[in-house]
Image (cartoon, rainbow, N blue to C red):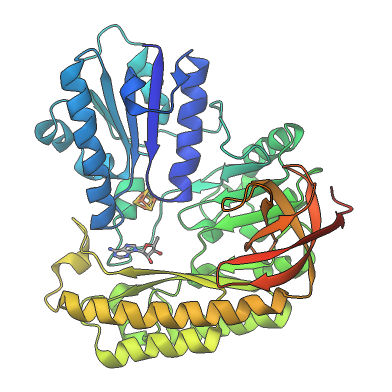
Length: 439
Ligand code: 5AD
Ligand code: SF4
């Protein structure tokens, strides 16, 4: 086997896992190719968060089946959350798949590929962190750092606790050692990852105990790391020490992703989110008090079973009150094995659709208004490369996590001072004034 092609679906944790897979395949001497039909090894890293994620993947898997029937020497491997939720049924329903593995099983891929006989195999037990594996970074100056895996929540809609298992925190020393390695390798921004990232540390043994706020402070001290982000936190675990850290730690960015899911306390209860609307709004008030300019983003689900017009109006009210800089909005999708999939009062699709449209309108209007506060300001932009729409311009991100397109001469990995002259709901535009002192 000489070449591979990997398609990644889903969240940042999957992007991280894919970077590990690529690093591992590279070290086995298998080379990445850009087209699936050129690959001896066709890999997928899958997601199962909504039905649409399943469908997208299954369309791609159909192509792999065709390619394999043309050349039976090809190997097809499926990793990630969809695999984990299907387990052995992967092979019953898709017999052309050679290897299937869950999110905690990336090291097993190497074991499979280097074994004598490539007979169909499934690996679904969580075995440990992949931090020791090589990593092939998608963005040279940015590193994902896994601080925990799994999730102990029981949100009624979510498939993740069943695909990624119970929460396990990584020892703080291991996390720091990895951040130091990344910094030595030229990384300037890290994103700490956990399915419930801010409950980090609660399961650690006494001699290794560290809270999430302590971990942030330790990462902030690493020389060369200029920006720290993290995802995804849970509002129930958003403590004052973490919010204060955003004001106090120079590298910790002015952006917090705080998944709301619903603005109705009744629905939040049915979702088993363990906070209500007031507690959520208290967290937001605390963030605004300590970090007035902080960008806030969120996730919202419409059409959760039993959601009434009144409940939905409550969500719109919270959106108007908080004024998010951006929001990911989802139509509820029943997932196998979750309790909400069994609830009797499913909301009819046209109602979900209509609520979604109203929500998206509100979210976009507010995000566009919020963006205007950057116009006229000069912001630090970490340059990522050429602009996607105009290759003569540059693209990067400000600390508040908005993309900025600008004209200038800075190089990828440098920080540019960019004067913002226009803003839409999603992007900023401007001109480079000078390289930042950080550059
Ligand atoms: N249906 C719709 N959206 C969902 N999410 C998680 N599970 C579901 C589901 N069954 C959304 C939540 C979560 C985000 C990653 O995906 O908003 O925060
Ligand atoms: Fe998809 Fe969730 Fe798995 Fe991420 S953790 S890949 S979002 S199902």
